[in-house]
Image 1 (tube, one colour):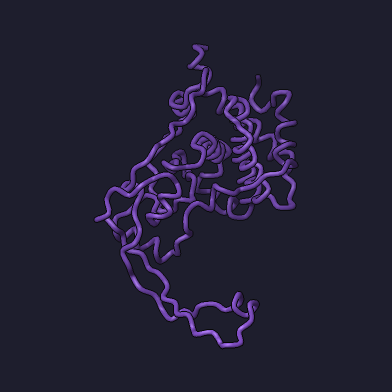
Image 2: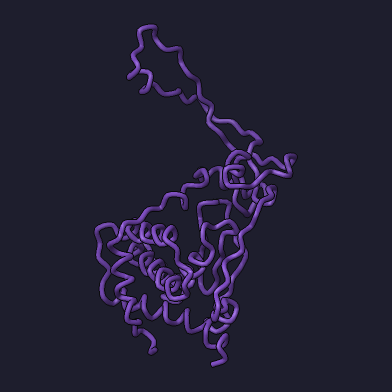
Length: 264
């Protein structure tokens, strides 16, 4: 298959990604969105991994094993004023607590303070990630962000995947898409900020095609992917050139892992 030329069903898959229903539930809402101040506080404590409360880790199937390693976090101090005697149910629902300040408490734990099952990515028969990265000139580096909702990141020719990403494979292909499409190059930073919606569509569409081609896609992941595309595109329609670039990027990723794996 020549680079940039889509397989017969790729256009159909892309049309599906752009039009079929999707949702993001359970991907970017699993962790509390800590303020920038708290994220800086985590960094000051030497934390470079996802952070959450014990109850949040428990809800994700992990248990705290290093209770003595509680990390500091800034929390709001709220007071609840006494309600009037004749308060209606509607007024009770609308009444909110009054913020009087903030305080620092030791109440959260880093990922390494917890234990739980780590699901390895499913095997991909006939395709090898390490071989693909070597051929593409891309390097995976350790994930170093305290935001558990961030699935991964890429910069230059390097990428990192959150160790507890919802779907490691899809996120890997998404970040590879960014890199191969040139979005992560320093001189493209301004363009990325201006056209971020289309570029995020391109990266996720690349992952959508690769996941389908390698027979890794399931209904839940497909819905998440479509939800992501719809979120970033909004009412915008991707230009034809952007779609052609997606086909080329997906083709390069698939070929890079299969050539050596199949001894071609």
